[in-house]
Length: 549
Ligand code: ATP
Ligand code: MG
Ligand code: MG
Image (cartoon, rainbow, N blue to C red; front, side, top):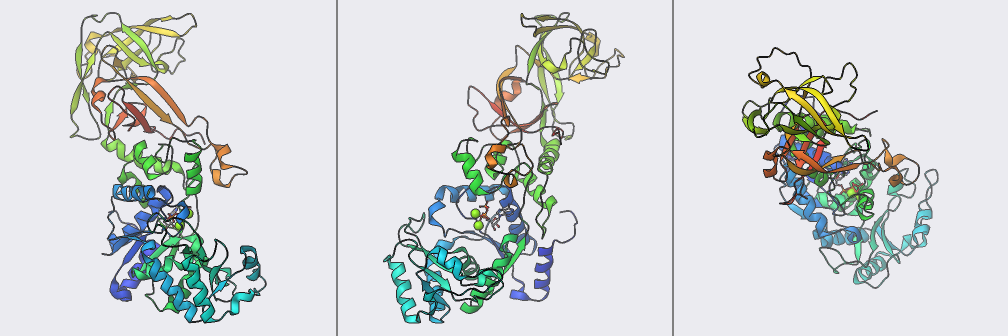
């Protein structure tokens, strides 16, 4: 890959390798919670974790952080695995934090025996008060001085299901005067009588993130545990548990999460969009999910290129979504075949072209790719062109079609506008033109100087397809930080469906996932909604950045 300076995590790993830390071994992990589909922010974390391992001869585990039974589901597990593989990464091991429940329970018992954890009967509110304030140390609760024997007994009974949700928690005996609130007797376990998607009803107590994540890292001998910035204040606790338990010292490092303009990225919010049917599902092409981007026409390489371009930072920032669009446009410009599609058709009749004649025109598939070859296109006297390519009274610099104006039909002839017909409402129904027989593309001997070229399809040969044009899902740059409900900033015009667009006949054979450039209209891919009767195209991205700032 191309030369660039090392990011701060690569610097850390290189120093560790140079110093022989862990014998130079690098083992990272990607730790999704299976409570939603992966999004472009996760892709940044995936590229980072798998990328570090690839670069330094290491490995990456996929570990499901499934310690919260209520919101988790195997549907999410399956989609997460499919998305990571689609992005082009292979994990060393597929692991589940829930597989460590017994071991994590034993870690808790170990801390109780050391006098470093206790069962607390206080309410959530009493616990919050017991921690004090940032300026005043906490006073603790009356349960803080329970004996080891009593704590062992109560914790075992918590596990056996003798208590109701919320009746008791297990807390670490930390430092109630610590400037870091997370060290003031954090909760390690809570009671939750809930069915878990993997462990079923085996457990009714579940470890908190802070008592599961570092422990899981350590069990797996993870060397570099990379997470997002909001976990910086958790790091002392992460280290404290590992030290007190005397287990493998994994280390936590933090980087800035990805924020994208005009996008929400929290799974909770994405789930609301799905449940409340603002979108058709997690894979709606307007969603920032990996499955949505895939369906929209994004390629794995374009997403990886985006993640490489944005880099890895130590400060939160906001990335312009047009950079993501730039990355797919750049790739498709090199790889997508050019085809002709008319999205807003109006009929054009060439009055001096023989009515019963059909000519096969030769068209270059992709001028950017010398190996892409050519194809043929049927041409006849009746075509469809874009309505916007004709003006009844064209202004001076209109280099398309109008009465008396000349324009080239791409891959075919030069024509001259002659006249038009309108319906009762004043809409143009047919345009009339004449063509110059000596002007055929590739063999033009007319010497005519024509400024504009427009696309077309032959009316008798065109296929009718559905085309879906997308705009941003939100009207404001940072919908998550605006006043009130983020859903009130949804763009009502984010989807435009054209049910009768005309495309050249070659496109009838297009398969889901295939990508094309519709000349002058953007990059499109075949949608999974396509049927034998009707092919559906999604616009992945326009040809240029048309978003008005
Ligand atoms: P969400 O807020 O969407 O629920 P999460 O962090 O709770 O996100 P996880 O499934 O726990 O979601 O995330 C798995 C990994 O992906 C974590 O290591 C997390 O830090 C990382 N991650 C999540 N969102 C982003 C983001 N926007 N940018 C970079 N990394 C992210
Ligand atoms: Mg998380
Ligand atoms: Mg979350």
